[in-house]
Length: 150
Figure 1 (tube, rainbow, N blue to C red):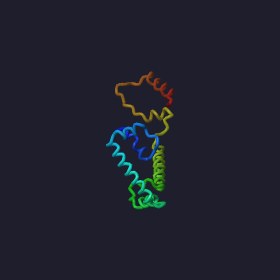
Figure 2 (cartoon, one colour):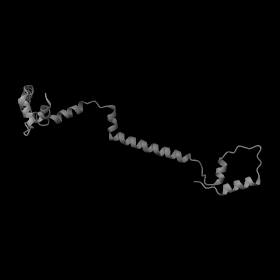
Figure 3 (cartoon, helix red, strand yellow):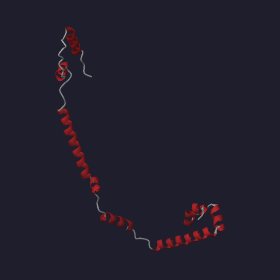
């Protein structure tokens, strides 16, 4: 089948008017395409006749969908879509957050805002050869007095 026929075949079979001139011109000049389009037209007419004879009763599609839903096996993942499961996950998350928050607050080290507590927590390696001079002591006192926690 050639391109001009492919482009407008659905509209032609549906009975739409206003087809392009190239469609009719090609059908008149190409016997192969004319035969294929004629066969498709006959099939479309037969299917249309069957549709009127075998029209399903009202509610047919709803009954089919309902039957499919009843016969479908639930998957393991369908449990996660249930509202009760979602609430359980939310409660478990809240409890876990509360427990972790309590643990972090309880295990947090003491107050470091005082310089004395900083000195108590730091470990100094003893220096065997160093002798503390009055200048070193003054420097330590200045550092302690000007200590501020960021």
